[in-house]
Image 1 (cartoon, rainbow, N blue to C red):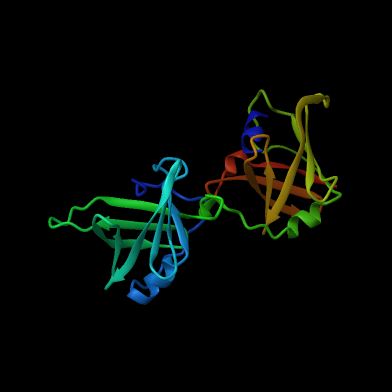
Image 2: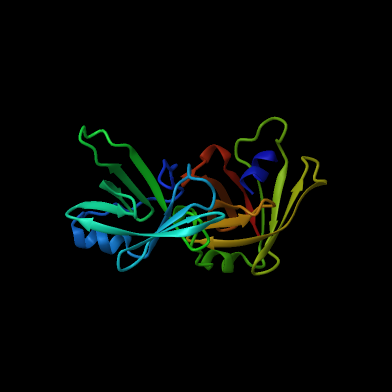
Length: 242
């Protein structure tokens, strides 16, 4: 049951993403400038609220909590990215540029400049790699249905226990739990849900989206938790849909 609830300076090193990246195939000045224009970046290791925005036209905005924003410049010189402030100019080799990630190496005479791994964020400061774009197609199909499942490979303590998902509205699902004897257990509640493709995403009590891959065949259903983009087959649940 606990397993189910568990699933229900500005440049620094960033962590891996939840969604797959799409690598840029060109590093020419035009494509690099176009790829960065209007984009906002941050880093997992940067203090909370630190961001940098590559404004169109070459202005560079640095945001820091409690400190007035700094406006400098950014420019593409050949295949290099240069950041310009009142005090100095730093240029970087672009090692990786994807839909979600930007990896730079500071240029130095010995060629051992520090690596700077950043990720793109939206206006709310959320990493784009973690933002789920819902289509709601699966959610519409689940409205009015009830899914009852149990662990495909349960531990001895959970054998026979079941989880019940009642999709009573178009936006909320009531999650309940039954003991091996069929008695309701004091867990669960009403939670928001949505979907993208074949993935059902439920917002848990910590306001975090947790997703499961849904496979339906007639009245049979299999739910496989997803973590960091990977299917956790050992945690899969199987049952029926009515």
